Length: 216
Image (tube, rainbow, N blue to C red):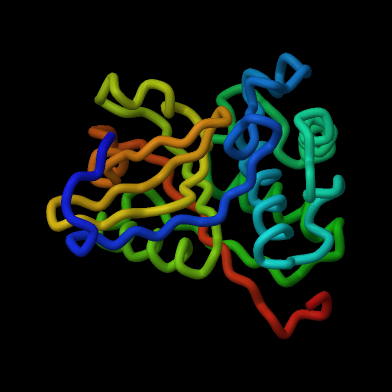
């Protein structure tokens, strides 16, 4: 969707997000493992987090494969190494806590204690969600987003899916977020994304770097 208006009418902030081959970020559709292709979105979100933070925030040791010049082949290898921590399962990784615990165990096994996570559930106020996205993107962190169900057909590609938020734009009329999933970027209204029309909601994972940790 186009973001209309003069430049001075909105604030735009986007990450210097990575590309793999011709894809914007990772692409779950390129996985060879059928189960990962079908349900590996949470593992992909964790892999994409590691690549982005090691490349652009200089957080060492996050990736098992070299992120500089990563190809889709090495991305698949990385995703297979993330799979035991965030494996596809019946019902999917349908809670923020499953992601936080699984990715947290991966970080622990890698000896990394500088990257911390907290959950912002989809039941939180929209303004709190806006503030969280702004804070994360401005600090250089991508935002893993879990969307469960949604009343709008426009959101069908995002339903029961983990994807990344990698930018935002605030206009006078609306707050937009830039999504990265399946190797593509799109702009969506956060209001529309957040207000799913269902009681059962997902939410966002928020990252924080503790600079006084032993591996910084």
